[in-house]
Image 1 (cartoon, rainbow, N blue to C red):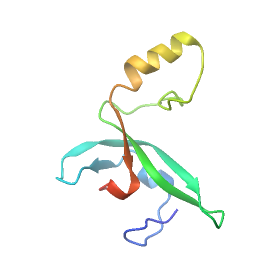
Image 2 (image 1 turned 60 degrees about the vertical axis):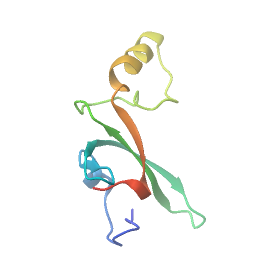
Image 3 (image 1 turned 30 degrees about the horizontal axis):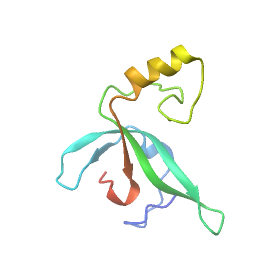
Image 4 (image 1 turned 180 degrees about the horizontal axis):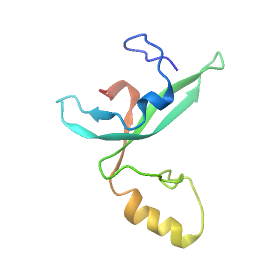
Length: 95
């Protein structure tokens, strides 16, 4: 994947767990997941970072709102895993 601001090529693994800051320099949390979309040329482009302010751990896909599973796990994910999640658009992310 290519970082559009600096032009350097980044691997997705290099983004995970990195701290993300807002425009004022305050730490929002760490990268837990990466959202992408396919451009007109068929390449994946980063559109947003899913950032968690809580402890980062294996979220098992339950950090995504579209993930469905057993109702008990879904409820647990909502109460515990998603409470500290923020979606940060790629253009606003400061790593």
